[in-house]
Picture 1 (cartoon, rainbow, N blue to C red):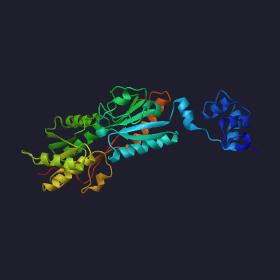
Picture 2: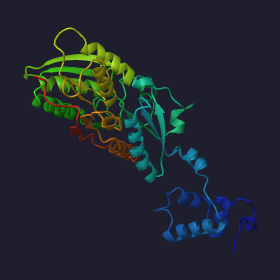
Picture 3: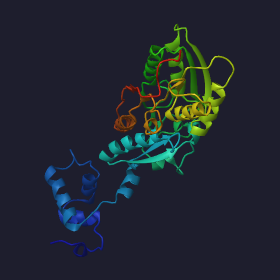
Picture 4: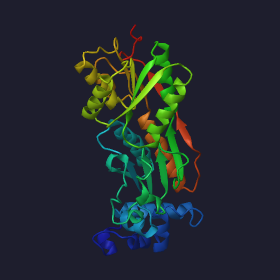
Amino acid sequence: MHTPEAAGAGRPTSRDVARVAGVSQATVSLVFGGKWRGRVSERTAAAVRAAAGELGYRPNLAARNLRLGRTRTALLVVPALTNEFFAHVYTGAAAVAARHGFGVVLYPSPDGIGPARDPFASAQAALDGVLASSMATDALKAFQGSDLPLVMLDSDPDGPGAAAHVNLDVADGMRHVTGHLLGLGHRRFLHLASAVPSWTFDVRAAALADALHGSGAALRTERAPLNVAGATEAAGRALAAPGPRPTAVICDDDIIAAGVCKAARRLGLRVPEDLSVTGFDDMGLATAVEPELTTVRLPAEDFGRRGMEALLAVLAGERPAPAELPVELVVRGSSGPAPA
C-alpha cells in the first residue's frame, strides 16, 4: 500500500503518482490534462488514475490552467442585475457551463450603455470568453479589442467583433402584439419605448411601425426609463397630453407596462376598458399586476443556454450559425376591445 508519507510528502504530487504508476511525470500531466489519447495507452492512463486514487492525489487545476492559458471561466455581461430577465439568462448559461466544467461570472454594464469596464486586471488572463446580452453599441469596447471570443445575445447580428450571435425574434413578437390590438379594434396607439439606446429596442420600434403601416392607425412614441417610477411619470405625461387619447399602449418591457397601468389608475382610466396595455418579457411582474399583462414571452433560460452553447462551440474551434429563438404572445386581462 502506497501512502503520501511513503512517497515522501505530506501532500501527494504528480511526481509521486508517476513513481507509483511507473511512468514519467509528463505522462501524468497528459492524463490529467485530458491530452493522453493517441499518446499513451488506455492501460497506462488507467494505471495513472489508479495510482492517483490510491495516493489521494488531486491535480492543481489552477496551476494547470495558468500553464495552458485556460481558466474555464466565461463572463456574462448584462445591462443590469435588477431585471429578472437577465437572472434567467444567467441560470440557463450557468447550467450549460457547469456540464462542461465551466464557471460563469456575472457582470453588469451600467444601464447597458457602457462602456463596460474590464472587471479584472487583465480579462484575457482571467477569462476564456465573453457572453454579452442586450448591449448598446458602445458597451463592449473593452472586450472587442481583445482576443477573447465574444458571443452576442439579443444584439445587432451585423455588429463587428462577435464570433457568434444568438437572438430572440423580438420583431415577430411586436408584430403579434400589434396584430392582436388591431384585431380588437384599436387605431390610436402609444408606444412607450425604452430610453436605453439598444439594437433590440430599435428592432421593436421598426417592427411596430411596419405592422401599423397601411392600417390607418395613429402612432405616437414616448421614451421611458426602465423602472416603474420613471415609466409612470412618462406615461402620465403622454396620456394627459392634448389631442385624442390613445386607446392602446404598447410597451418595450413589462416594467414599463406596470408604470403605464399605475399612471392610468391615477388618471381615472380603467385597464382594459378605457386603455389596453401590453408588455414584453413575461417575467414575474406580468402576473403580479392586476389585471395581468398581455405580453410577449421571451424564453430567457433557453436563451442563456443557447448562448453558452455557442460560446463553447467557438472555444472548440467551430463557427456556430446565427440563431434566432421564437417568442410567444401571451394574452391576459390588460388588453381588450377598443372603447367606443
